[in-house]
Length: 524
Image (cartoon, rainbow, N blue to C red):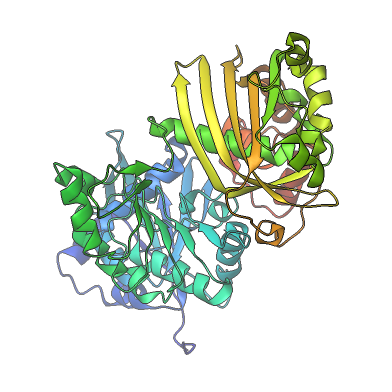
């Protein structure tokens, strides 16, 4: 882009001038400024502090659809809020057609005032590329070659600088192209909850390595929306939560329609497909979609802790009156030969006639359970192999079965299969403790080399802290007292710091010194 020599004379648009522009008035100077790509425009929302930032910005973007703009540096000035935007002539023209009055979902209206040519892009330099790149890098897992763009516009670091909903085609396209340039191979792409009406940017992104695509809880209206996937080798696809799912009366029609665009598909919405008229096979059974997030968080948290060098970090997960037992399907002689003696202390009720031995390997109470777990070799569990089934859930008691592969990390590292059944009990603080842990270990049906399961990057030992609801409330109140931030901002800082108040205060001070915190973030 060449730098123009034309001087910049800022001009203000209010509703009266916007009406003249929308009615075809010449307004030469205003139109010239609207069309310039080398300037920032300032869009002010009168009394904007009364409105939720995300809801207000979405209302503005919906009003100018299909035109697009990228709101940058949203902040408060007194009672008003404002943001910057550039290279958005079409969007400004659409705003003029609304008379700069935007209907707010709550029934009120947002009154806008636009300053055209607020600043030159050469004088006010805002580089958005590093911000996007940092957000993408943080969301990429090189071990699984997966990129999670779920609710991308809500990324806590990026959203402080710009509002980038992937529902805008230009933003979506730019993010995917940056992904292709800056990130290694991607096999799994998660696009959940981005309000997508179209996935056409996937067609031109050249991300040809994608095999697993998660499009759940978007706004895809019809199966033709999947046309951009025709040139990709999609093996697993998730679509539930989109309006298009309501267009089919039976599973056969639904599957047939999807396979027009993904002919190599082997799994749809977590269900294996087949051509032999056999019943559809679910890889996991979680009846309530809301519980799926809970299952994912619990399994990730438990096995991350279990795989640590010191398993006492599991202390906060077990109920004080919990039970734990282990059974092993490997015969003792074979286990001895394979240096797996630690797994033969099994409470297999069918193998022990002596009732005292049955009780000997049933651990009761938190301290005894941790003692039993520490006797077992250190492990690494393959999260990609996990199959989870929710067996019971009444809101108080939750029974979960998890099976998969793991490898031992002792002198004779080897791959084994496991099944673990957890009975979880809800506490008064809306958290869950493990009441019963039943552990089963066996050999794999086919020998698997340990090198096939493992991390490509090392991980630091975790020193987690456990806080219940009342403890978190105390930490939140203390953080509010120290920073004078409002409840919402304090909660965000603490969540990002995993409720480590020292880290949260450090992050707050960095943002405060760089003037990255808007005035409305503080308690008035």
